[in-house]
Each structure stands twice: as structure tokens, then as C-alpha cells.
Image (tube, rainbow, N blue to C red; front, side):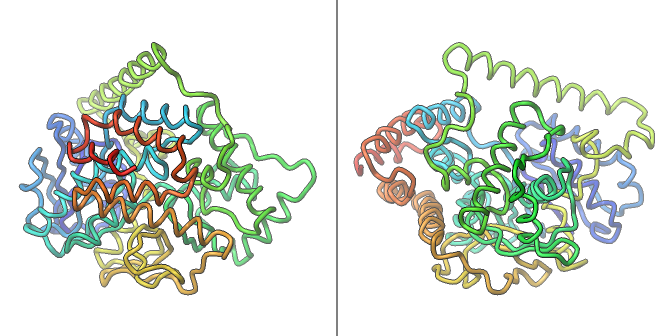
Length: 460
């Protein structure tokens, strides 16, 4: 295989590549091509790939560039992973949502809707270049909002695309925390999910042949039940995780179903109006927070780069993803089974966002949804009998239509269609407060989106 990693200077790249290289037959005679605007950073990741033990005798080459058109010819898969929008605009966008009583994020939220324009223009251009240089290749997108970008590429170009999410692995943690009081990843679950990214329902599942919901009911219906201690996360992240676990349990008790994994923006569409977490920093505190984040990222990069000149022994390369997240092989990243599947080595069970095409009953074919499927070299094979319960069908349908329309608006640079996509968002729909938030978000994102979208305000 020839695999292109756009955003190849990311800390995600080395762990993915190491996991793939550990299976010798996937990249034999192929290439790893890394693309990043930061040429020094992507060069260092490339050098680490060639230094890791799995690369020896791998039979593949490593290339790096800051020009995507140089990397695309002959590619079999293009993996896209990069941050969308500047840190300040993203944080201001989330703060604006908070001010008006909404939860802001980079995915299933109104701030995610505006952010989708910034990244969508880039994704659309990448797909257009793929049509020219590698028309048979798959585009695999990890940048949020993944569902919007999957709809954008699949519905508006000739390229096949999958929108993928860390939720693919998060549920292995969430279910282990709920069922076994263990703050660790368990790979023995087999689940089917259907819905929209960050708000997909767990349709069914088993653990060692036992029904997950039956196991869960025995656990969470005991008087005094509380989620386990989250020792693997920072104190701030622990608040999010604990909130998510409590809400998953509440959903099961109340509705008889629950979300596939505990992303907060998805849960907030179900439990809109709650304020589970402390307010985000504002004013001077915001500038200090952004400076701290930048300093942390710079420090991590310096530490990462410094290892290039060191003699790294077997114990270094054998560390787990928890011990060395930037260096350790990470087979849990959903990109790894996708590469295995597209290479023809195996058929893989994954969850991804893409147009429905009959996978989930009651939705248009072009509507972007997230669902369980088998992936192999011949393409996508959705799981059978994926049905959304009637009482969640309206919510899921509106969210999916919202994200599909966002993609249409980006592809056509149509501000009126973008306004219609905002109207389709079902939470706090089209009232004065929501329209005030739309206007503020438009001002915040004004410098990072095409000028034509400033006309959106003329349509609400």
C-alpha cells in the first residue's frame, strides 16, 4: 500500500505507523508519505518512523513534503488529521456557546458547525486533488467535524471517504468503567452502533457472549452505584468522563438505550440545558490559558524531537500508549484496522460516518450517519438491522440533516444553505437566543471562513 498522512507531523502518526508496520505484509513494497506545512516537524516524525524497530526489513519507503500534490500520485489511502481553526477562535467560539446556554465543541454543536467551514474548504480541495492524482484511493478523515467532511467528500466529489472518531476506542473504556469498575481499555466487547457521530446509540452488544445491556442493568440498578475512579485522566478530564458515565447510566434507566460512547457534546443534545462543568476561562484568563497550551505543545515537541539524537533501547520502544503516547504503537487507533482492511489483509469491524445508503432504516441515502460496518478491500458492508428507536429518531434525523446540509453549503459556498443548516440544528431551534449566538459565531469566525458566508446573517 501507498499511504499518505496529511497532517503527518501530528503526534498521532508514529503510533499508527508503528502498529501497521508490525504486520509485515501490509506495507511491503509500498510507501509512507507524510504531508505537513511544518516541514521540520514532519521530517522529524519521518525520521522516527525510520528509527523504530518495526521499520527494519519492512520493505517500504518513507517520504515527507509540505506539498500535498507531490504525495498523492498512486496513493491507496489518504489519512487526514489536523486541527481546524486557530486555538483562539476555537476557544472564543466555545465561550460564545456557553454564554448563550449551549455546549460548544469541535463536532456536534453550533461552534462545530461554524468550524466546519474552515476545515471543509481544505478537505474539499484535498478530495479534488485526489480525483486528479489518485481517484481510486480512500480518504479517511479524523479531523472534526468528521461527519460533515464525510458528507462533503462522498456527496460532492468522486472520492470515497470515511469519517472516523476516537469514539471507536472510547467505548472500550466507557463500558469497562461501567461494567467492571476498571479504568482501562477492554477489547472483548462486540457492539453495534447507529446514529450520528458523538450521538450514536448502542443498538446491541455482547461481552464474552453475554448481552451488554443485561450486564449493565445488574450493575447500575444497585442502590448507591457510582462510576469508578478515573485515574488515567487529568482532574478536568475526569469531570467530563464521570459526567458522561452518569448520563449513560441515566439514559439506560430512562430510555432503555444509551449512547455508544460518552462524548459530552452528544450527551448535551440529549440532556440540553444542564451545566455539568465549571465555566471556561474568560478575559485575561483566556489569553493565559492559550499561552499555557502553546507552551505545553512546544515543550512536548522539544521532548519529542530530542529523542531523535538518543540511543533508544528496546524498553523505550516497548512502552504502552499510556506510558508513551507519542511513541508507542497504538493498535487501538481506528486508522489501524482501516489500513488492514483496505490492504486486503482482513475484514474489519469498525464504526464510521458516511452517507446512509440504506444502512439505517428510515433515512435518505445521502444523509450522513454513523454506523457499524465491516470494511474490506471491496468496500463498506453495513451491519444488518440497524434501527433508531422512535423516540430518538427525530433527534438523530435532525442532527444528521444539519450536518449533511452543512456539507452542501460548504461545497457550494452558499450562505443561504448554511443558514438552512443552522435552522436544522434541533437544540434551541431558531429562537432569538439562538440567532444571537449565530451572529456572534459568525463574527468570531469571520477571518477564517470565506467572505461569502458573511451573508448568512441576511437569511435569519
